Length: 186
Image (cartoon, rainbow, N blue to C red; front, side):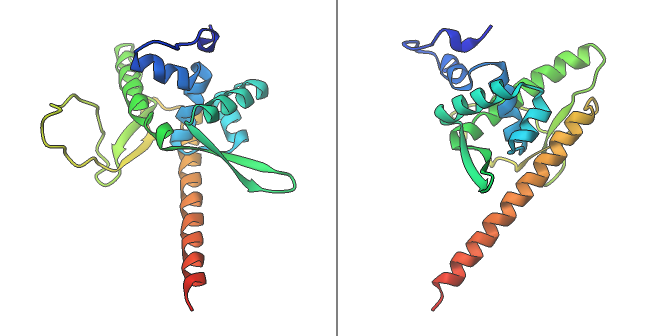
């Protein structure tokens, strides 16, 4: 069933607002991959197995919802990458919750979790928990991901490819920042 077939307009419901922005199950899986660091159309198609028509449609819808931004990285032919916006990165919390619930269900059937959220500095697993909203906030750990014990070859590829893409974008940002600094010098 396509969640986009009936709108959520007029509902005073935060869950409905998030569901409307994501669109459907394909939108959710595409956001998973984008949050893992995949950015290229071909990588998103390989990871999800979604048809080209569905992928193109969902990317356009996610962009219109303000969850992702399309950026050109090549001309002749024109090629684009897709990166989560701040609003899109907010969905990391939702993804963590879904991984945590899914892992609980998998463990009950004797399977390991395919993905782990970890503290990038310590390597310790991270788990969502409730805290008193009136308490002093604690510093958030630096979030990272790694394949879990139930991760298949595709999950290992997603995580590795995402890390490569994040490193590439980080390198481009530092090159761009250093050339901007060079141009500003007299």
